[in-house]
Image 1 (cartoon, rainbow, N blue to C red):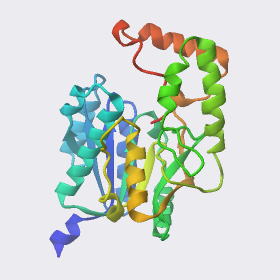
Image 2 (image 1 turned 90 degrees about the vertical axis):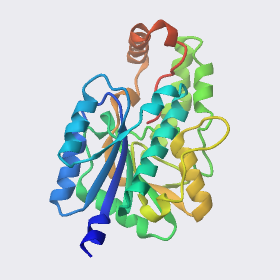
Image 3 (image 1 turned 120 degrees about the horizontal axis):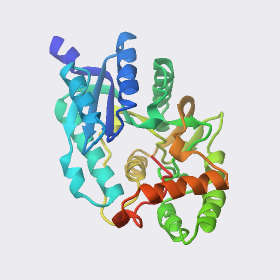
Image 4 (image 1 turned 30 degrees about the vertical axis):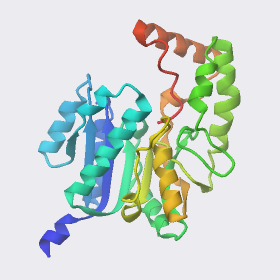
Amino acid sequence: MKQAEAKSQDFAFLALAKDCATTIPRFLELLDTLRRSGLRVAAFVGENGSQDGTRLLLQRAEAQGEITLVPTPFMASEPERLRRMALGRERLKSELEASGLKPRFVCVLDIDNVIAKPPSPDALLAAAAKLDRQRIFGASATSRPHYYDLLAFEDEHRSFETLLDDLAKSRVDIFKYYRFFRSRIYPHQRALTNDREIECASTFNGLCLYRADDYRLGSYLQAGPSICEHLVFNRGLAAQTGRTMIIDPGLVLRTPMDHAQRSFLPFAWRRLRKLVALPLHRREVRPDPIAS
């Protein structure tokens, strides 16, 4: 009986981490707050190639029994970012399955600047309670001042699967690039920022809750062109369960600064600073971020 109780958990948190030493303490504080409130919590964190002390912080947390640190050096050998993220998320999912733990809910989250202001235990519990509805398999956070994660979002009217390709085509000059953000990104981000629940087929936005029984059915991997790993995962669950997701207005994160909407001059200045800081051999590789 005691062994079964030890395997039983309320929440299992799954996160990838790279160069986020400034927000690791916020994540650990969230876990501690949940545990002190009486919840049983496990956390699996994959780290690869950090240069800012992230790995040391995570190693200390593992030594204190706060998390399980998952080795993910294989991610470094995958040059394509979306594919790399999918491989990392799938590894965390496999680690959870191999652990034998039996959580009620799985929380997939980012622990970089999006978790600078973590949700409260009450907000997490309220969001998890919504998963008892028969038609819902997942609930994501929203963010303020606006929802930001278009790549992971999809409903019957909107999909952003080709957004990265379209964005790359707009990079011929800074004016066209900014017009793309003003016309194709900012309006949709504002439209998805609402005080009411938004039902959809896929969402993430930095943090997403699933019923554990549903989460086990999914996979972040697919053959063919690389797209956002959360979109792959959620599409699969939607197809298997016949249910949908919600963006929960009560589960609020802070919009990361690198996803903030800007007027032209701050936008151009930020782009210039990125180009100056980026190594020459990578200047044609990474677009500005538009998703987690």
